[in-house]
Length: 131
Image 1 (cartoon, rainbow, N blue to C red):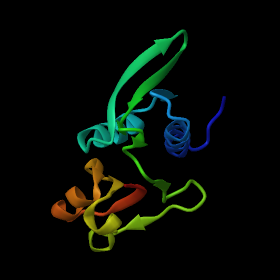
Image 2: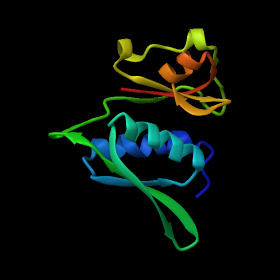
Image 3: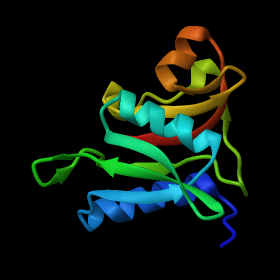
């Protein structure tokens, strides 16, 4: 299966798995997605993730986190899309849900959260917002 937007596909798979109350979901392997999942794990929005090889293709199995029966992630929104990229300077990085959510950016220093990018005074492509 050819996917034009692997980040959007990953966010959609996680969102759909949460709606169906699945315990885990498989997503496409990429280094960028590994970085994004690392940030989600660091902030306690997913339980864990691990790389697996099934034959020729590599996948990442993400174990989802729930608070009781409610998902830990309320909203996953893709901001910068392949057809319309969204770049922001460090002064324009959005404050997601008054600081309770996180913005994920692709910067020259790698994939970082909005707060880390603000502290480093570096802008970049605003990939997604999560709360």
